[in-house]
Length: 110
Length: 114
Image (cartoon, rainbow over all chains, first blue to last red; front, top):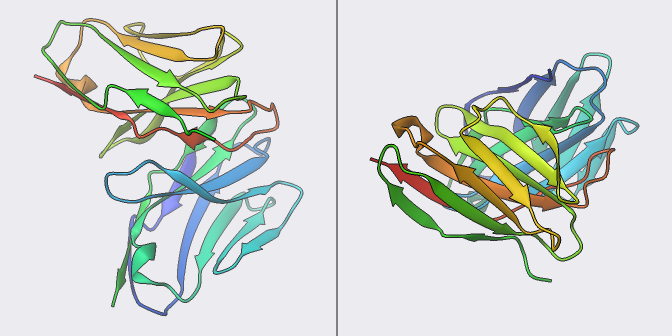
């Protein structure tokens, strides 16, 4: 079955810096890759997603890139702000279910 | 549009008991998925229901079961509770497209087994 690995597990950045979170997946048939943000005590919320026929997608300060050949995808957050502090999860849809990475705790220091 | 609603928010049970959790999806969503979230294991897939049928199942023991009703509302049941079942149980609804569609999560039910 699909396996998703996510790195780093913890990331601390200074306000205004960029943050990058990377994920790799094992099943080449996976075709949908969403990213979720979970603030403390709250539900995971979708922040951006990408399908396998697209290499990059941007939404304001957030972008996701996908390399199908290498089977990895990354989340890029520019000009980080304190409210970006949260746990971020990547996921891969293998045709049956969404498989999540273990999560990255992002801390933005002001 | 109302979001995904899960009840109850908190539950405290003792070992050996059983528990039922409820989830009401977003109107128009036919798929309901359940996930277990723990600090050490992240988000683990339990099962998915689509149009009242279990479409997919994760690697959990048979003590974990679910069902979906004709109005797409879903329930999850855990029998013979163990201490290790303590977790946040998240329900998520989606359109259920086979190509993958965004999951919309509820606030979860925090289950504590003592």
